[in-house]
Image (tube, rainbow, N blue to C red; front, top):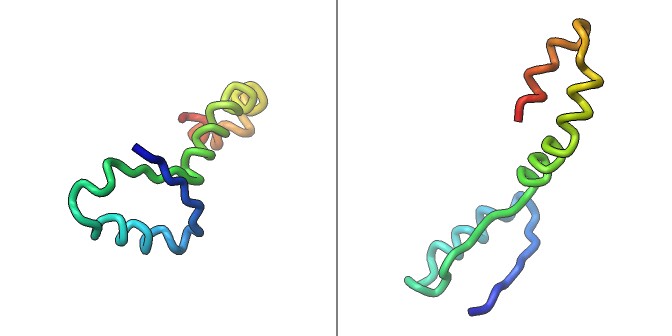
Length: 69
């Protein structure tokens, strides 16, 4: 089995997915889209505890909902 890694502009992801979906059966075993969403999740998990202590006051309580990951 071989792995191919592609870096594609956000606006072109749909084109690549269409190509993959239109290949013959059993050509691609699996594919996965890794992008900004994963980076945001990683940032949130790393910064959650710091932001929780910084924003632990009444003035910033409106923003507490963004700390829930």
